[in-house]
Image (tube, rainbow, N blue to C red; front, side, top):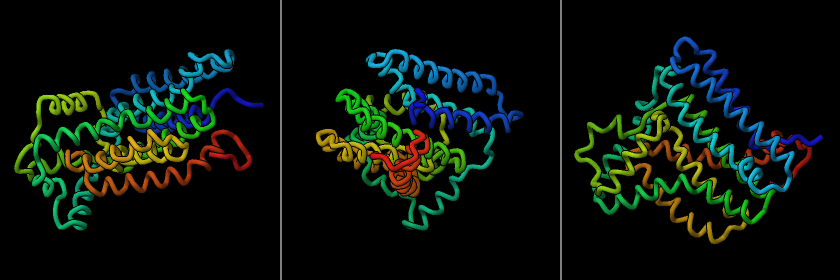
Amino acid sequence: MRTYLNPSDRLTLVFIVLLTVVILLNVSGLPSLPHLIFTYSLLALVILLLAALDRRTPGSRPSGFLHAFIPIICVIIIFNSLGDIIPFIRRHYYDEVLIRIDHLLFAAHPTVWMERFNNSWFTALFQIAYISYYGMPIAVCTLLFIKDEQEEFETAAFTIILCFYLSYLGYLLFPAVGPRFTLNHLQTTDLQSGPMTLWIRQTLDSLEHNKTDAFPSGHTAVALVSLFCALRYRQKALFRVLAPAVAALIVSTVYLRYHYVIDVIAGMLLAVLTIFISPWMHRIFSGAPHQSRG
């Protein structure tokens, strides 16, 4: 009998359970434990309720839309919750290792080397490219949903959400804050920024509660997976828009001092891994015993 939970629902619920186990195993060091348990319980309940509502009212556009996009909302909330978890369960960060790898590869610190290109126009361009990441997966999924390409929407959403959660596992296993904090003393000048660019950076800093998200570069991984989904599901116009934006975004992660280059390389490898295992994972979470498209 077919269940009303789709693969993205199940993947999100499994990740919520995983995080719940992690925090319960570290209960003594987590002052925000009640808040986290409440948040995860509420997310799980909302997923179950929306899935049930969608099943009871098949064909309803509002309930279908809410059910389809609730995992994406969960991704955002879960990301910020990591800011309450990682500092209390991981006492050691891996920035020193990442810095050494970058220096071994380039015989320099890439963020410091890129100072030679520092000007307000580049900073504004790359900051806009950097924040375009937040709209990329939503644009791909929304376009497929509006076109009523249900199977393509479901597999694309699952692939993108899987990429998010795999990157979150990276943050849990290899926490790092990034060069804007660790190499700031080596930078000879601040990034030249206009008022709008400065406002964007300050807004991101205030909204993103999790600061240990350098390795791997989720921006790189999710952007590349979104680009792949646009190409795979024949959204040619969107692909043409995303391709240069993704290229600029990848450069921006280092120019803006958010990531080490090794973070970006790891993000690229994570995108490849996600694309490779997503069909298999989708079959597992859909309960399909045979090969299926997507």
